[in-house]
Length: 316
Image (cartoon, rainbow, N blue to C red; front, side, top):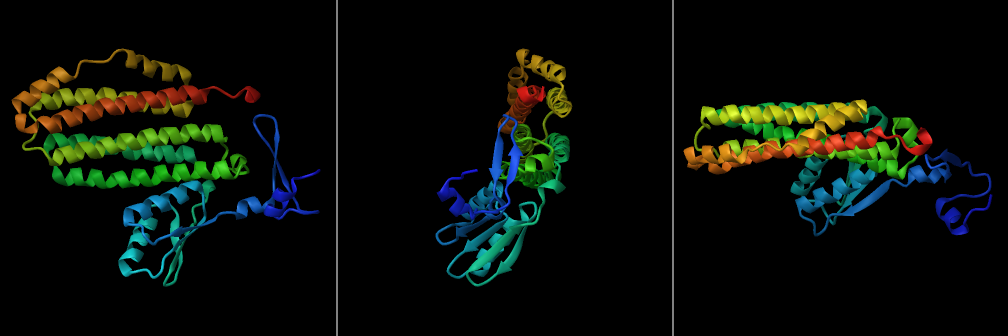
């Protein structure tokens, strides 16, 4: 077999180098040298970055699948080290491996095989569902303590969603992982899509809780009854969509999507409630809008369930 000379030199491939052949769903074979899995270190220059920019950089490299991330600066101040530690704690499996005056080395100890994506999606959905139950209770009862608790839980969802994104990044870089995790890159793309939709649902729960903190007084009971009815329908759409996705059930997914063609009239009673409590007009509108939006995210998940239920041609 003749290989491109420049590629062979770059990858350290010579006569007698063991290679791995990986069959692809399209019917071809991929040739992978040993060095592919070793190219997993990166370096981030700290100088000139504020904490938010540094957070974005580290998350981007974490998602890309790097196992070792070196943060390099001229001389780290104590507050900069604290920032890096806080960022590491916000990402699943990221630990500080070593520190010097000018370099902090982070390593990801989370093995993709230890976090089955099916279980991770169920966990994200479980946290999100509980957040919404508590968000509605906090809003209707103007419970500030519960509202703050829900807002903090949004970070738990973010950590798990970023973990799924990292796993997808690893699959794109290392095709050997497809067999090890039991899902193709195409399937995993659908899982990441569902995780992103659930993250938005959790964001709306946190948004409702921030609206709860802005309430001048608890909403009137009549509004609460209508809001719970709206919430029941939206949660049903979301739960049925998740079930359709997990079971690869196209019939159930289509049943969910039929509701998309029958939008209900919500805003007249929301506007009436706002006239009764003008001091709460904005928070009342926010909670109703968020409940409608999580329904749309449920419809998006149902569409993803339809997509993943179709097997690629070579798998038929």
